[in-house]
Image 1 (cartoon, helix red, strand yellow):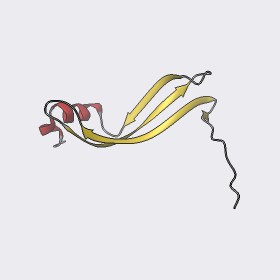
Image 2 (spheres, helix red, strand yellow):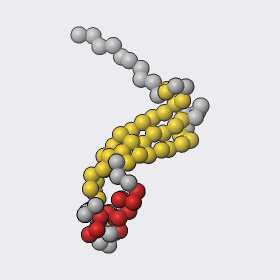
Image 3 (cartoon, helix red, strand yellow):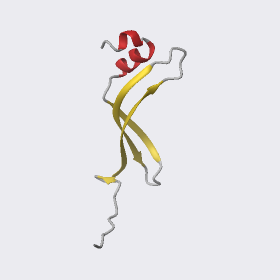
Image 4 (cartoon, helix red, strand yellow):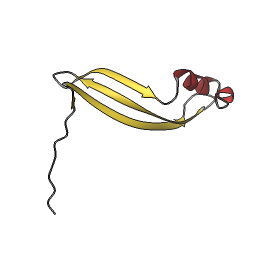
Length: 80
């Protein structure tokens, strides 16, 4: 069976964008070794006419406040 190669475009309504979806979890290298739960997000990179990144936007499925509390007050953060 012959497969046809398709070129993928990074154009989105005349703006060049790269969008990555990701998930992350782990232990931070802090003295109390806080365990971070799994969270997911997207990162969008906007490219200029030279294909250089000029803007970087992230979204998370956890609020910044929740991430902060779970990092610096883990005994409270996991009750949220």
